[in-house]
Length: 436
Image 1 (cartoon, rainbow, N blue to C red):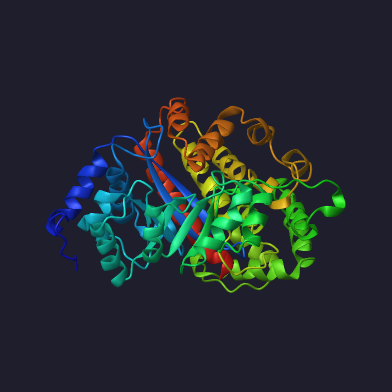
Image 2: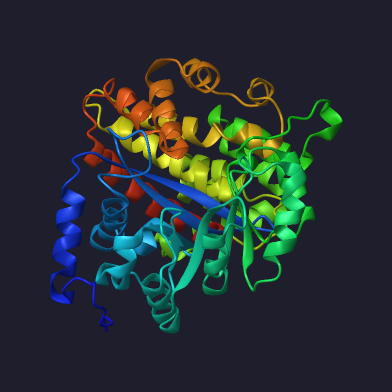
């Protein structure tokens, strides 16, 4: 039930108000930023909705931004499609926090992130405690110092987010020590480098937000490369080069664990097959080259993982591949080989981070068409254009994204959001199959 609150909206009008607020901005973009635990597992996403004409976070006010998140996650594709098994962090301002709209978000799936603009009045604190009593968790955004307003929040939130770019590294330890006097988990946000990650881990941060995992510290020397993943890359290269089934079968026989996973994949419920598999060759034929190629590309991102948790790199790669493929399908002149190349471009675009090798060196190990190479290395051509578009979505840069969309007239912001949500849902289903 909606809780009574003197400043809250009429519960019966809550859904209509969300719909009206979401519709008030014509162009909405979604950025989904991953949050990892100390083991490197993907445990949450922060959901950021932006108006394409806005340089900053608010869409005609933070209330509208939060309302848009609620509308799109509940009335659109649904929370499961957007978040999968992870939790969502949603920004809340003063107005949204005191409204009944917040209670449309299921507490088991959402963490309410209190913006730095919110003042901890008695009314705000009372509202937070009432929501915590029915299961909601709170995070305090952009903590950079223990000013009085921040200190008043600390006994009423579960997570404190510290912006590493705005706190001097020399001051970070002292800030952490003072925060440890309160029962809060610490989240390091805007982690840009391995050095920042190492410092935050050494200080005891439990959660990490940023794309450090997609910005590798590149290694040199062949002896430092991951041999298991290079074997997978060799197999993928054979598939891309249309090698004979006998050659593929022989390669799978050299990798028993991979052969087992192949059989399990072919027999999974998602494949919809009812035929008994009697050999690796039979499995390869039933799966088909296109499905085999897509599966192998994604398997690269789970190989050698020491964690049973969700992989942030796999999520990013799967979303990129599916979204670029969907965008390519909008071209009435696109052939099947064009959509296949689009999926491949998205998947391979993160191999540099996966293998900790320069991408130009990775591409020496795998056979890909010239247009795919041009897209990956120089963002040239139609594929490069679509890859750049997906990267801007991840970067949460609405002005640049709007300019890029002007070069793709068939794609409206509304259509882009729809395709993005569908890609989230598809990537979640794929990860479930790979980790089953």
